[in-house]
Structure formats: structure tokens, C-alpha cells
Length: 489
Image (tube, rainbow, N blue to C red; front, side, top):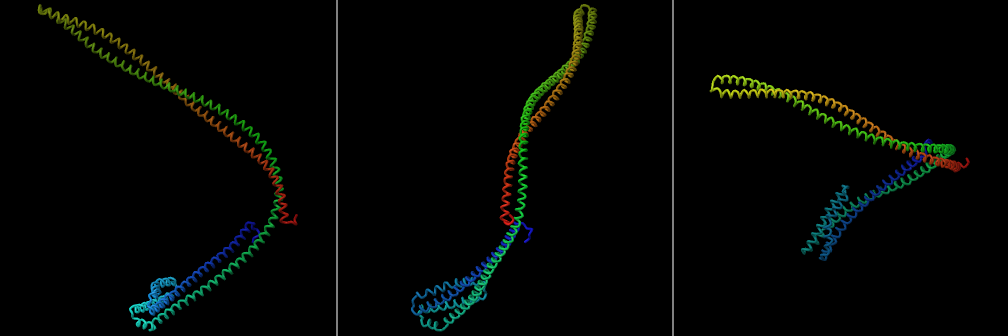
């Protein structure tokens, strides 16, 4: 066994080898028991064959005895063994064939025995039938002929041969069973002794190795316990200082958490004000948009007025052209009336009436000419008013355009203000969220510092316990050293 192996490895090696021996012994014992069981089964099988062969001879013999009793007495009760033998022969022979199916010689002999048994029982039935028919002399002659005895002797010879072969096989199997049992005993006893010797040797070796290594380990434990005492003392001092520092840090973190919450509340108020400002800016932007829509409506109405005024000026010009035509017609009519008056005065009494009509036409033409002049003056006034209105409307349209551009600039300014307020709101919200996260982080840090402070206190207590344990460990190492090496103390 290697000296560099660990104690656990040596134990594992010892248990592995011992287990191997035990497994080998168990396998050998199992195999021996298996062979013994198989041999016992074979012996039982042979016993069954012997029983069936003996039963066959017994049934045939009883049938022959029944035949003799009936031949002598005529009593039908002697026929029961004969009927039983005849009825049970096929099943008995089939069972024998099944039991000796793996033995060809026995199969052949069983065939011979079956043929002889069938012939013997057939002869018995024949003798019984002759007796039943009243031919007793013929039946006696058949009995005394020696044929029944010869068949019975041949059947006994065949059955004896079957029994001898089976008994020979039985003796052979019993010898194999004895050999297997002796081998199993030798294997179990020898293997057990060998396993016991190995366990004793392994135990002695492991104990010796354990004692040596344990002595070395005790020495290391003593030196380590002394170092552990010194380290525990330093750890206890450092834990106290760390607990004091953690207490101060916890106070500072608490103050930082309070400040962070105040900042978060201020940021929340600023965010609310920014949201209100953004709402007002969005409302002003809507108002400006509605003003732009109103100015656009005014612009459309102004354009419509200008269009109507231009249309009115164009129609005034058309009316003026018509008045020119009417004026020319009035002048021509006046000229014609004058000419007609002149012609009527030259016509005498007959032209006087026509002169009156011509005078009336001339007067009507004068009135038409005067009316045409008045209408032309009014139309000129309308044209002037239309031109003035168009110029004023164009000036108003320009003013409306200027107002629309200024409203657009105001709307753009309101939109920029709304965007800036929205950006400010988002920034304030981010500041609020960051401040809340900072406050949460401060609380978490405070909790963590509290946990660290508690852990430090527990570490301080653990250091004291470690110091006490190190002292106890030093005492235990001395006791263990006295147990391993009493002479070394």
C-alpha cells in the first residue's frame, strides 16, 4: 500500500478489496447453490421417471391380476383395474415421453414399453371377452399358451432397463451434486478465511498509518491553534473598530437619505409647476391657432369682397358701354324727330299730327339723353367708389397678411415655449426620478450598512468565540497527543 495515499483512500482500498472478496465468495456460493438446485431438479426429474415406470408396471400387473380373478370367479368387480389401466395408459406414456424428451435412448425404450403394454392389455381384454362370451376353455388355453407371460416378461425387461439407466443417471447427478457442494464449502470457507486475513492485515496497516499521521496532524493543530488565538485577538480588535466606523457611516447615510427625500419633494413641486406652465402654453398655442384660423377667414372674405368689387367695376363698365349706345340712340332719335318736325311742317294740315308725335319723340329723346347723363355720372361715382373700395380692401388684405404672419410667428414662439416647457418638465421628472432612486439607494445603503454593522458585531462576538474555541482546541490537541503518543507528553 502506497505511503502517500490518504487515510480515506486507504480505507476505500481496504473496503474495495474486502468487497471484491465478498463478491467473489457470493458469486461462487450463488453458482454452487444454482448448480445444486439444478442437480436437485434433475434428481427429482429422475425420481418422477422412476415413479412413472413403476406405476406403469404396477397398473399392467394389477390389470393381469384382475383378469385372473375375473377368469376364475366371473365377478365383474375384478375388471376395474383392467379398465383403469386401459384408460390411464395413454396419459402415462405421454408423461414419460415428456419427462425423457432430452434422452433419445429412453425415448426408444419407452416406445417399446408402450407397444408391449398395449399388446399385454389387448391380450388381457381378449381373455376377458372370451370369458364374458362363455368360452372359458378358450380363455384358459390362451392364458396357458405362455404368450401373456412372455409379453409381461418383455415389458418388465424393458422397464428394468429404463429404471437401470435412470438410476445410473441419478447416481451420476448425485455425485455431481456432492462435488458441487464440496467445492462450494471449500470456496466459502477458503474465501472467508482469506478475506478475514486481508481485513486483519489492512486494519493493522491502516491503524498504524492513522496513528503516525494523526500524531503529525496533532502537532500541526497545536501550532495552528496558537496562530488562531493570535489571529482571533487581532480580529476582535479590528471588529470593534469596524463596528464604530459602521455606526458613523450609518448616521451619515441616514442624513443623506433625508436630504435626498427633500430634493425629491422639491423636484416634484417644480415638475407640477412645469406641467401647469406647459398646460398654459398649450392653451395659448390653441388660442393662437384659432386666431390664425380667424385671420385666414378674414383673408378669404377680403379676397371675396375684392373679387365682387372687381366684378362690380366690370359690370359698371358694361353698363357705361350700354349707356353710350343709349345716348347715341337718343341723339339720333332727336335728330330724326327734328327732321320729322321739319318734314311735317312742310306737309301742311296732314303733317301737323305727325309733327306733334315727332315733338313728343324729341322730348322723350331729350329726357333719355338727360337720364343717360345722370346714370353715367352715378356709374362714374360707383366706379370711383369701387376703385377706392378695392384699394382699401387690398390694403386691408395686406394688413391681414401681415397680422397672419405675426400670428404665425407668435404661434411658433408659443410652440417653442411649449416644447421648452415640455423638455423642462421631462428634465425635472428625470431629476425627481433620479432623486427618488438616490433616496432609495441611500435607504438600501443604510440598511446594508446596518446589516454590516450587525454583522460586524456578530463578527466581534464570533471572534471572542473563536478565541475561546482556539483555546479549547489547543487543550484538545494536547489530550489527543497524549492519546496517540503517551510517551511524548
